[in-house]
Amino acid sequence: MKITKQATDEAVLSELGGRLAQVRLERNLTQAQLAEQAGVSKRTVERLESGSVATQLSGFIRVCRVLDLVERFDLLVPEPVPSPVEQLKLRGRKRQRASTRSKAKTPSKKWQWGDEQ
Image (cartoon, rainbow, N blue to C red; front, top):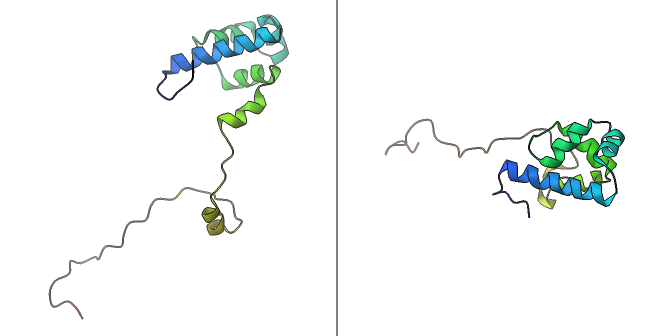
């Protein structure tokens, strides 16, 4: 199954769990061996693979580290690269905070005929 934005949380967790289980089996590791190497409980590995319960993200990272999948996180959340125009605006500085869009300046008083001066 391809993971899409239309997939439910449960479907995504189930798919990720199935993929982790498949990688574990390809590496010829038991759940207990993976848990020991990752420093998590066997029950955590069982939960991750079943996709039934969301576990702590740190446990997920530990399991992925043992399975040599951590470098792939870069594909999950790529490093943002500002556009060339944005780079020129920043002049080498790193952006620190978000800003709101500025609204068009509205006159404080409604204009009327005879107010030209």
